[in-house]
Image 1 (cartoon, rainbow, N blue to C red):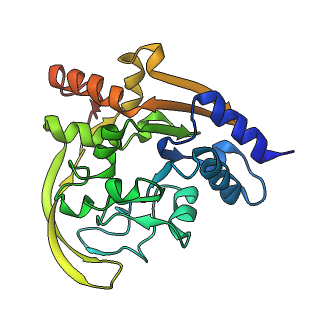
Image 2 (tube, rainbow, N blue to C red):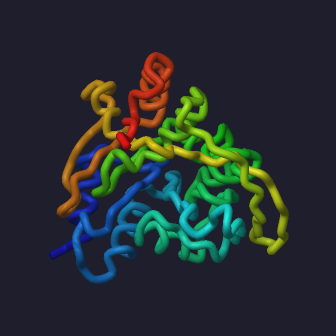
Length: 250
């Protein structure tokens, strides 16, 4: 089986084109098990996006970088959101934004704009984060075999509305950058204690033209337009701050 060709065809069917800026959430097991699958998937994405495109993947580290272990090393701290993100993070040419718990890795034409200023934020997904800035360049968000609940960009929209469930206390982290310089900075953390996230509900507020669905090998995949997601999800959250969460009954 020509896995690369089938992946390429699936991505094309979703509407990904040369030059796109693309943030990818992923589940390797949903895509299927085959040799060198991480390399094949990343190579195919980069080939499709081309030299004018940009590939982003979350490299969140909140499982290992915590209030009890508040040390983030941009080179060494692993991603905790899937095998494909960790493979992408470890590529020699991949660049990672500076944030202790919600960093993003990237390759391509617009990584300077998307990644460099994340360090200025003191929340996980603030206005300088790649999750926020993707909308400013007409970027797209791909869910490659994973649920729409994995939509970290929704946290950035929530930060604009500040619902009661979102923020917790501040934590002071030690951050080690690419030059091995250490610095300390306080960040306001997300909470969600007592709430279950339901970002898959975005489909109920989007028009059919706002997203696409296709199979990539074995995986159900969605592609969202970041600018439209931000516009419609923000309006919904302002009207109903609890729309995308359910309170967990005790």
